Amino acid sequence: MDERESCAVDACGELVEVPLRAGDERPIGIFDSGLGGLTVARSIARALPHESICYIGDTERCPYGVRSEAEVRSFVLQVGSWLTRQDVKVMVIACNTATAAALQLAQQTFDVPVIGVIVPGARAAIHSTRSRKVGVLATELTIRSGAYTRAIQDFDAGVDVFGCAAPEFVELVERELADGVRDGSRWLGGVDVFDTPAIRAIVSERVEPLTHHGIDTVVLGCTHFPLLVGPIRAALGPGVRVVSSAEEITRELAEMLSRREELAAATVPVHHRFATTSADTASFATAGGFVFGQPLGEVEHVAPVVLERTAASLL
Ligand code: DGL
Image (cartoon, rainbow, N blue to C red):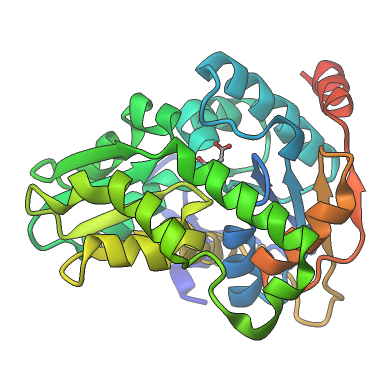
């Protein structure tokens, strides 16, 4: 650790020593509207193998991307309240739509730090683009909110941002995941099950407008889209880089926990806990294990009414 990190500035502007905090074994809370956020959880689990995770997917009320902003804001407060009750040390909103609609609200409401996927995704795009023309593929609500445009232009006001809403991609991934659950053998062999001629055709039609305007970087502004990266890359062609926020938010989280001295000690047992609002926990476990890259173990059911009650008692 660098010496300054054990110091703080006092009221007179002088650097003073502050006591170092011990490592923090509490889990990292991760939240998505469903399974897609497991792409973010996977990246976090790989980079921070000593950290425990408490993941909740609001599968019962997915998709968020076609709902009103008010509705998504109330869901974020409910899920955030539940995560607070699980004593998480930080909340990661892995859902782009929820981040666009309610990141600030969650930060103002909860006592722990809350980070979202949009600023890290915007940063990844800024680091990648040379033409300073960036495309964003996301849900309707995320595109409509303008959150990615603002975040990208906060880093570089000279970058042109072109949004492309692709709501049918979420349904496509959900359908493929459900089919895969029904026909488990398709997951075997490590084949890219989402890269089929039929899916390429759907993706290509939607993504086509992003092949104009000199765009050299496209941000996958939706948790589900990294699962379609093969067809998306094929549609955009070799001159366009595809970036997602999963790795970038992992870097940000790791740095934050390290600076706050809240990384878990390597000696403490790691616990990965998964919950869904869907009563079909078995399907969530199968499809989720595919997205997460390893078995989820037993998945808990937390009904939306439980989330509503938790928020009502806490807020
Ligand atoms: N998790 C959402 C997002 O990243 C996609 C799915 C949905 O619409 O709920 O925007």
